[in-house]
Length: 322
Ligand SMILES: Cc1cc2nc3c(=O)[nH]c(=O)nc-3n(C[C@H](O)[C@H](O)[C@H](O)COP(=O)(O)O)c2cc1C
Image (cartoon, rainbow, N blue to C red):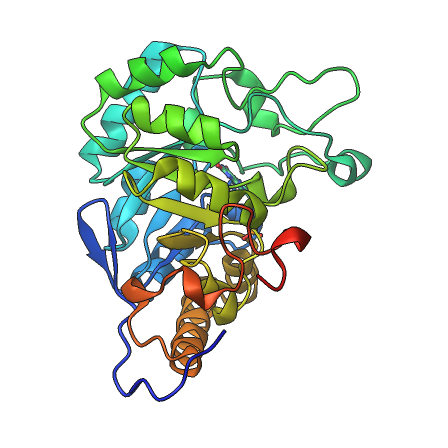
């Protein structure tokens, strides 16, 4: 519900997150194996992120070491963790992320096993020669071949499937970085995450890549935000494609958004410049949408911008017209 005559000559897209002020609320979600998209891989992603003033959440299954990625560009880096069965290995990984200057640790909690990835399976997907998860070398020999779902088992070399809230508590003891949980959809899990000391929550269904028929992140967001009640920032990802998607995200309770596929498309087309271009396009679109909505300051956007964005969510037919 756009408003008018509010003076939108100055637009402020800044966003406070984990004690830092970001120029805009678009973060690059962790995506594995960037070398599959461009010969420069994560080096290009990091440069593009830096040039666009975006935080890059570096995947555990990146094809470039944490240290090399950090050295490639002065991007703000967060590190995404697929918790490894070998806890000593996990601990060493955390130490590397801290030493490389990563500012937050994002624990992905929605992938204890892989979902049914039919197209990968049909295509017989295997990592090409020379492409491997550099940071996990030594953790699991299976990772050398990628991690496609197979008919003979749901075992995934990516992550430890025995993860519980106790593991989250253990993890908190091991690091001084703020811990953000990625892949939360249920309000009770969000509440529990805050109680467990999470510094942030990312509402996500992994871009629809894990559990078919899972609730869409945008539909889950309002109830999670109510459960969290402003105690920690809530982010969301999945299907963010235009500035208009971003301008609406604070209404159901998101402080910032992350994008996955859009920057990978940019990376595939034009390396670092492509990543930068995609983020800048989104930020320009966001500014235009803020002006057209009569909301010159991102931080001031509230629930009233989206009709019916209460606990039931804007997509709930029951909320229509309220
Ligand atoms: C190719 C690809 C690789 C991904 N790899 C990871 C990963 O390593 N770790 C992770 O937590 N999420 C991973 N994701 C999920 C993204 O972080 C994010 O949740 C999702 O892509 C957001 O949806 P969007 O692509 O619609 O923007 C991946 C997504 C894609 C498309």
